[in-house]
Image (cartoon, rainbow, N blue to C red; front, side, top):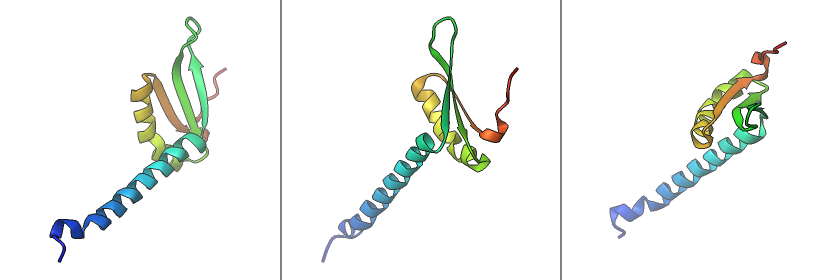
Length: 90
């Protein structure tokens, strides 16, 4: 008879695999489902804001946590929004 700790190993491995797969799909959706617009500093030419826009409001809400993570990693402001909320300046 197997020890109790080894009996649940396949279930734990399957759960971890499923979570990694979902994280991969979420990350791919964040980068591929939206459009990206970089706002650069006129003085330095460096990116100061990344604007990611999605066609649906629920997508923008879904990907807001990914935008927060990207902002922390890149060190620039990341604005995640729905295309319907984009303001035209002029």
